[in-house]
Image 1 (cartoon, rainbow, N blue to C red):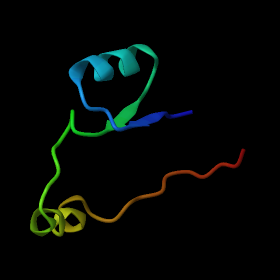
Image 2 (image 1 turned 90 degrees about the horizontal axis):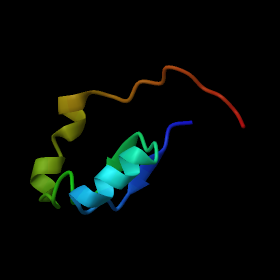
Image 3 (image 1 turned 60 degrees about the vertical axis):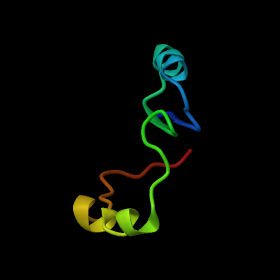
Length: 57
């Protein structure tokens, strides 16, 4: 199972999460808040999401 941590704000938090096996993170440790104008271009920059597999639990 892939694990994503939300609200990661410090390098220390990132380090602990990596040691615990967390695969992805989101929060101020990665990028500060951005103005709407900058974010509006992101879907074009990265393209549409791609689903490679589905599973049920």
